[in-house]
Image (cartoon, helix red, strand yellow):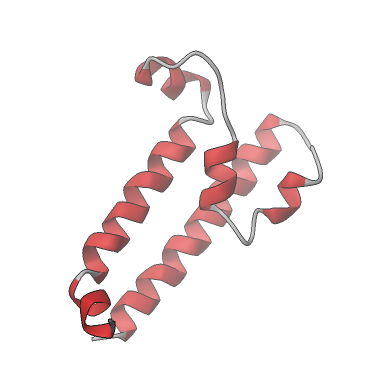
Length: 89
């Protein structure tokens, strides 16, 4: 099991980075229009930012604050993921 994870750790990091980028794109109006979607959705970005973005499920401070918080949360998760992937070398 661990050998399989070590073998696919960098493709998994890349997949998370792409999924989080798309999730953040779904939370901005210009990118939603670029993707051809009809409405904003913060849910994928909130999920990509868990556990740091958990308070956003309970409190609503507005879309600008939510976008800033989920961007920071996603960046924190990506940084931790990169450190963990590099640590297993």
